[in-house]
Length: 422
Image (tube, rainbow, N blue to C red; front, side):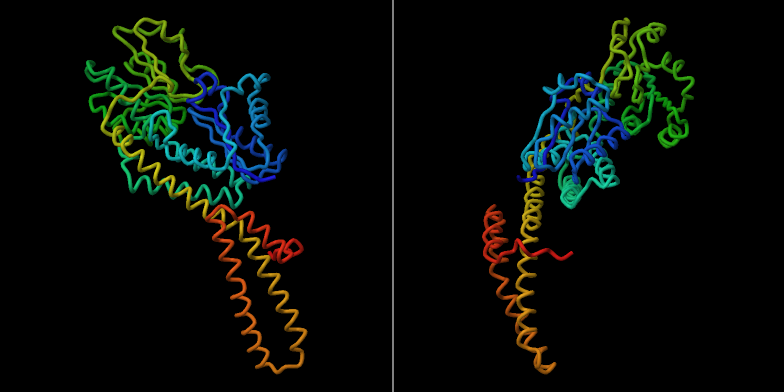
């Protein structure tokens, strides 16, 4: 049975935020699931990506393991009836579709806000985790490095990554739109993880805003806020800062809501209070919208307004897709070469063994200088004999007929009995 590269995906395109936050995995959960995949199914290539917009598992195996993997996800998250969520998962069981999907995700083509640069860093971390757990074989190593090289081409050759990171830029655009009539709007950013940090850096596009930052680790908040000229608030005083703010951007990892309806009801809201929840699981109770004057946005309903940067990214999509197509073609060329390499090596070993046996048989008593000459001649003959089948094998790769050619050469030279030298 043929081993295939496969993918299992739950994303913003297939599931609402309520489902995505149930399935969302932290780093420790990802590591535990990878270990189970290795132990239970003997996987040598596996990759897990989990962000606010998607949880995806990529793996190389003879069988479709999607149901078993979903059950593992349910077990890890404590979901007893995880089979009820099968409909939210999309499966890719053919090499090309799984590989193409991973390229598109890594480049930001499948992001909720097109061109989100954060996904490339998240993919790199996912690969590093797989490599650390020895879950990345030659196939996955080559595939990921091809993806990283493709990402560099996209940055260098297109406008797809011009401007601010997409999700962060969308957040800043939203704040700018709603606070347009507010003099020096007061903005509080809670949490400076990867998304929060990116939002903070893009706050420079709101020059009139009075920005404050708070974080559990104060030193991290100071590290980000000081170069930008923003004020840092002690995390213990975040509730007072929320009371004063016109806009609260929450990007904090917490299992239960950090901002509740009961808390917001205590605030004095003379005009409005914009709450933006960038966390998965969500950190703001959806019922806060019941409080007069409160406007709530989360990662599902943030939509970037038309902007020059976004339009450049949209215009660049055909070029990005062309670059991806070229990279996948190059990767497949390498993969085909890898498919025929063992056969070529076995053929070389088989013929070399015959050559050595015949030299030993007929040249026992020849002088050294004659032996050297005959050895050189027979090596040259061997190389010329090998040239035709090797060229034919590689040509068969280009025609996608490698398997048939491998079978013919293996039978013709009885290569099954040849053990490849390590």
